[in-house]
Image 1 (cartoon, rainbow, N blue to C red):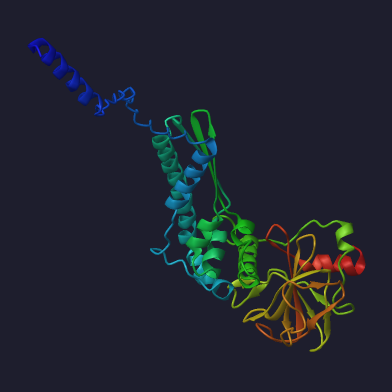
Image 2 (cartoon, one colour):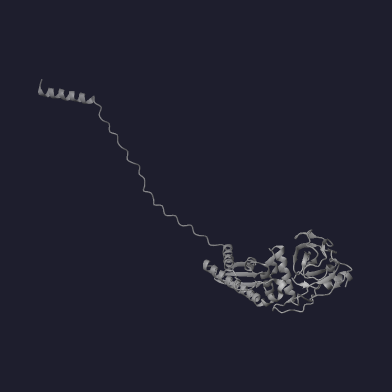
Length: 359
């Protein structure tokens, strides 16, 4: 066999052997999908603080005043025992007058400070306008100090404050209390104790602490007189208004009607019982306030009235007690006082005279 033929046979055999072997398959790896780089997230912007509302600003001003207005009476000898020691109370007239001025000045200063705080907190406010109204006078201050354990606190809690934003101005109104506002939340004991003393001082003394010559006159309509019952008909009514009492240290602000001990005392009017109690001047007493605001005070009863309760309604003519001789009294009689809605005592003698005789 020639060399060329042998080479061809060898080449053919080689191809046959190679064709029986599985050739490795090549799997192309797919290219990864393209993802664009993430866009950096911007940091969240802080939520802007909303501008305070007008109501918020007004509330902040009022709260600033309340926090600042804290009068302190501790440096003053302001305590008194009231009607039982009038000379001592009147000696303190300058103290009570000074306390009134102190409270008014402090209230005005605290309002100004509250306005400055508002202007510091709220850029829109550039001006403060303060107004002050005061129901205080030395007589009310004396009644407050004589009847309330913490007069400063009661005064603070009764003071009115109102703030209004008007454009660039804050208007702050302060109202120092009058009697009704000062004692409206008090119990019957505190309320009547303050009422009797305040009314006495209003009746017997002027705004300068000087004793007055008050005849107790007060204009009442015929219609009102018709609502009053004579408590002890046929008994002599004594005209003893403003007579000296307690060794000329106080004035008599009522009228006396003599009667046997134990005699029934009917209510002159329908109304509400606001006090049933005892004290060294009035003895056992009952106070009834009618729907017109007049208080009728029945004093020196033989015993404390236990069948009536404070806050209870009574009808005209209803039994409220019995004539006695308790307290500052030297014979059985009914002492009747009348306190008008203006917080002054009026002379009951002409009132009962009109009830009894029509003139």
